[in-house]
Image 1 (cartoon, rainbow, N blue to C red):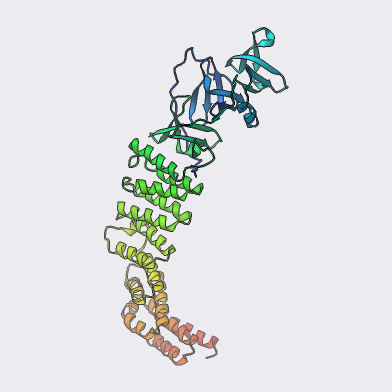
Image 2: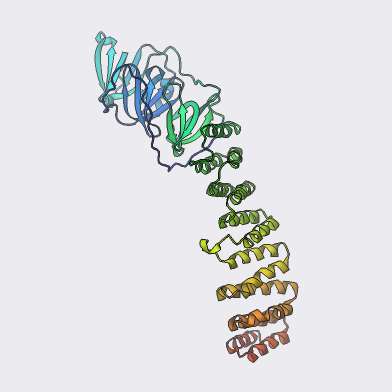
Amino acid sequence: MGFAMNRTAHIWNGVAWIALFILLLPLRAFSGELHVYLKNTDHISGEELRLDESSLSILTPHCGQVVIERSAVKGISRDLERAEEILGFTGEPDLIHNRNGDRLSGKLVQIKDDTVFIKAFFAGDGIIEVKVEQLDYLVFASQQKAQPTSGPEDVRVIFTNGDVISGKAVGFEAGRFVLDPPYSEKLRFGAGAFRSLHNAKHSREFFEGGIAEALMDVLERSGQPGGNFSRVFPALVKSFLKEGDERGAQIVLRRISPKVMDQYVFQMIGDEFLANNMPDAAVRAYEKMLEKSSTYYYAYSKLFNAYVKMRRYSEAAAIYERMLSNPTVRLSTYGMSVAKIRTDLSDVYIKLKEYGKAADQLRHIIASPTEKEDTRKNALSKLIGIFKRLGKIESLIEKYNAELAENEKLLGESYLEMVRIYLDEGKIMKAKSYLQRLDELGLAEYSEKGRQFMQERGE
């Protein structure tokens, strides 16, 4: 298993130059994208390739300028189709293959200013120049095929452009991963630069969760898990999940839970789990989110919604009751009304068949002078539905008559709803009694609507 990272992240970094035995060549060199194949089967793509007697340098899109020991290089080509031919080459000496089919053998001297210089045998060791645009591929002399090599702690990084680099994951600095390959100095790259990491010993198999543990070990050694770069962890979780590595994603959550204090990190991780239909893991992340900030509305709402999705209604109800009893949670700051919370809470109580508790939540909305009239009417409608289900419509009117009387429209709507209900149930006299009440209260608009309902039903 492995993990894919966010491909839109900006990648910026530099690497230190290794010691060179001769002066660096001019900056302008082998232009256009090229593929460099190494003897350990790694391959790197980039532009501005240069070669001297001790090293090769190439400008990569993921690690900036990379300097590689010349002895580690197997060959160079313009396209990936030559990979097998280059890696399997065992000839002697160096070989240049041109686009027109010509071949030059000899000793490759250098690559400079868009020109390849080779001491060719056919020219009596004279220096032959080959323009880059004529080049198909070149291979360095070797008596062995390229073979993967690795140490026990090595990982094999696959970048978003398909490049592969092996080495030890040795750190995490300034938001960038640090990899130590055997053929160059340490390379640094951002989270958006690579697609996955493999166990270098078994390049076709991902660690069974081991890569997640290994990454977390590296981050902990560098002192970063709870630091300024903690928001890299949601990206790690996302990438693990994208590759189907649920265990790796959960390892990240487990390892960071005691250290990371930023509630937004857990919120983003919980969202990733929920999006991947892993509500249990989402709940664990949201619980940590609430643990880090008990005044944060979204910590409650995310947890509530996750519980509802899992049909853990009792826990959902408890989390919203806890929020409503916490005066430090200022819902208005988040553009959220108390009525919305109470309505959602009443729905949960209805699912639990705790109708009394559901009715109490709706009563708070109906009785609140600060809630909008439409909100109160909707709460009343839900309350009527509860009492209709229980066969206690009359007791509803009696219990909440004082609250209803405070607002003529609310009272008119509630009595009109009674007319509808009793007409639907065929209880004509009951319906007429509520029409009479509307007339007595002087609510002519609503009594007229009630009579229209009766006429439509032929009464």
